[in-house]
Image (cartoon, rainbow, N blue to C red; front, side, top):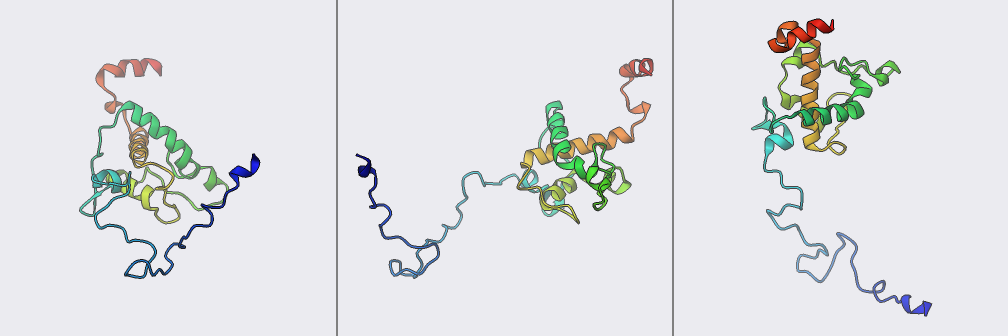
Length: 177
């Protein structure tokens, strides 16, 4: 009974190693070329802004989708996992890794990065910059946009004044102090 499952038919059939020469096809290749214009499932990237952070080679200035409170909370969670070890939870560039002797990370609170378009942050997370590696394989594009939105929140929080608080909430803020 145990020997009935030990057949070698599938193991002993004719086969080619990938990219090995073959007499079967006229071009001498064993593997067929990809049909022009085909896209692998899940790899269709019609929205350039969403997937690259750029349109016509220029960083986008607006988010490719509406950012909600849930998006900001998800962005904060992803930021704390992937970004805060180097950039710190406040985004000042003095994360735990930096305090242990590694290269100084960028502070999001510099004038240059405060004025940078949102597509810049997405592009840096996607392709890396300086000592920062690419996070494209680790963080989904939509989550990279959420992290970018959270970076904007950090920038606003560090540079906000009382005038930035809505008038109907200022009284509650002053009572809390």
